[in-house]
Every structure is written in structure tokens, then in C-alpha cells.
Length: 87
Image (tube, rainbow, N blue to C red; front, side, top):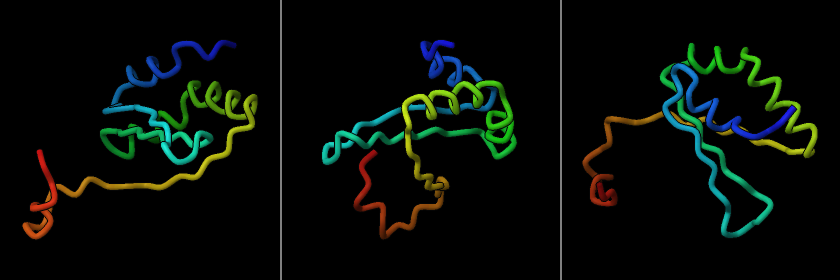
């Protein structure tokens, strides 16, 4: 099994809206993954796919630890917060 191209394959999965990694400036051992999905159905499909078997194998191979936090887009941003947001 090769880990080459997994990210590109995930990005091509139906319902994937984004899949990006970010490195921590404070901790070189920490990588943030932000993956975005059209809806819960698309995420459930991804989790049930053969791709997750490959991802799990890589996590085991490199002994990667995870913490999951879930965020939801808030399209109704209060006007009091808009002063702090630049678009």
C-alpha cells in the first residue's frame, strides 16, 4: 500500500468541500487537518469507504494520535462580530 495521492483522492470524493493540513507554529508535532463535507451523509459515506481503511493503516503505521473537534459554519454572524472580520 502506498500513501501517495490519498489527499487528492479524498478531495475528489463526492461531497468533499475541502481537505487541508496546517502545521502548528508552536508545536512541530501537531498538524491540524480541516476537512469539510457537504453534509453528514457525505461524511458518513467517506467514513464507510475503502479510503478510511488506508487512512487507518497509515495512522497505525506512524502511530498517529488524534483529537477531533467539530465546528459548524455559522452563516448568521452577529453584527457585533462583523467588526472583527475582514473579507
